Length: 314
Image: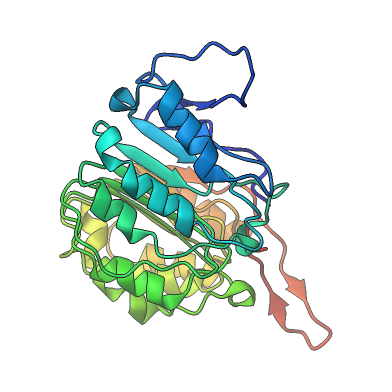
């Protein structure tokens, strides 16, 4: 699977592309949409953003999507992050920010250059939702943010320092955490032990949605979650897009009760038919919404080694 479509909405608002210079497009009310600001390769995103701030009543902007910037294959977003931080007083109502809404046609997810993104959280203390796509050179040191409710990091391979940074952050209001851990082919090197602060539940007391997905160690993650305190407070547990097989599902069924969940998302999995039936007859019958779609076939190498693949890698 590749990222083939841009975000359709953010913070409950429909995405709207800020039109190119000279377009006759009528602009919507500033507070009614999530504004996407993008440029083609070799165009300066900062210049386009300046035009955006001159054309739109930024005091009423609630959601902002940063799309493609100049040559994301080669350059990170440091300059545009600096421009956003400098404009913080012009965006007092900003509640949601997504950095890197870039499709594979613009730049594959594991080739998107990122950088230090936490200055955006420091600059916008009223943010409720923050997301970033791309793990190459991504930096997310521990941060405190009192109002953030949703954090999403999408990557084909997430470095352990980012995972540890998220786990060490003070995010007392966080309700939704979505981490795409990825594969070692593209830089993923976190182990289950690195997820301990998240799994403990004590650092994220309001967490209701937890996604630890798109991982090549999905069975190990599922096994850890079988006894993890964080699960008791969740409404949705998402272990999709990874290499989950019968071993991980068996651990989930044999661990703490999951019947309190509203949804268990396991789509893109490597589950056998018997295990799928067990999940349906136990959790599904108890009222848990199950997503078991996109079951994959295990590839076997010439030496008999099993090969499973995450949904998103390059």
